[in-house]
Image (tube, rainbow, N blue to C red; front, side, top):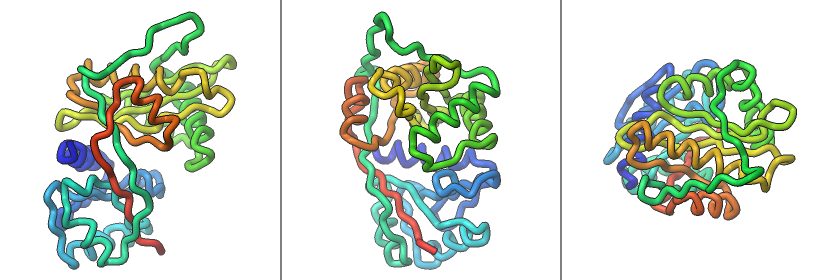
Length: 252
């Protein structure tokens, strides 16, 4: 599965507004933000970069005033991690990823009081989702018009955005999913505002998006989890552990 996840990572970065490919790496940039979670690189499966290749990749980031950063599945390109470490990259995090297929998907049964999942349609709804996800992730990123626009682009380009409406008409929680590529799709940004946690919102939006991607032709959907609590939520829906992804960067 690592090859499929890594091939997806390359295809997804190639959707960025600006793409730089050098020495077996694909780097995707969005001039609307300096966020390292949006602007990063990944190796092509099987890449065996030289010192010069890594130096050229670093320059591509430095020229744009960005932190050199990569996300990748190491088993799909075993030579990459040692080459990055030799150039001064350090490990930010190692995340296990989970995969769901149509055969394992278990959609929660509807019941009275269960979260009602919706697809956003208005600018106000996209803005509310962006703000809710910012709050859910404790300000890890600031909500912005650009963030709301990225959510809309994801929905309108073959991916998906789902949310559960709060009593005041805003967003209680939501999630996004990239458009399928090479047979798989990444589900990300599953977040619930603190005041609404424990009500099944994360599971509901995850199941809805996963089913939507399968209906769009994806053969699998994968995601990373942030803790054992979220892992249990995803496993109940049908996600299973399949591998690890590394986040590596060079500090300024």
